[in-house]
Amino acid sequence: MLFPVVIHKDDDSCYSVSIPDMPGCFTAGESMLEAVSNVQQAAECHYFGEPDLPTPSDMEKWIKEPDYKDGVWVMVDIDLSRLQVKAKRVNITIPENLLSRIDRYVLAHHLTRSGLLAQAASRYMAEHP
View 1 (cartoon, rainbow, N blue to C red):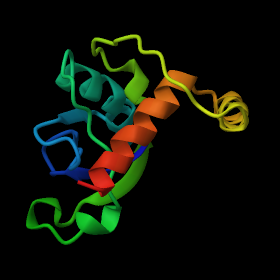
View 2: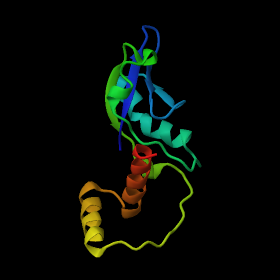
View 3: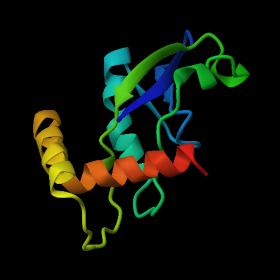
């Protein structure tokens, strides 16, 4: 899923990255590319074993926050399925035509059926508390 991240660089430091949708999750790198490349690992470490995973919000939500002033904003694809959380097997019933659409979608987007359904449910609950 694409998450907005903000990159800061002070004159005498490396590039630092904040992930606003993941409070307390930070990373850094000697170059901007290295810093952005470290985001996935930072998310995996930050959410290791946590049952509730974040959902990305619109970048516009964060841009005017004082903590992120003068930062460079980029969207980073964070694979939430790689976060080490305990999975539980469930049995669900779903219309066959919807299941076919889901299977075509996950195949085209290199996802898993379980991962897509979990992400969709998380996003829906975040948008409809």
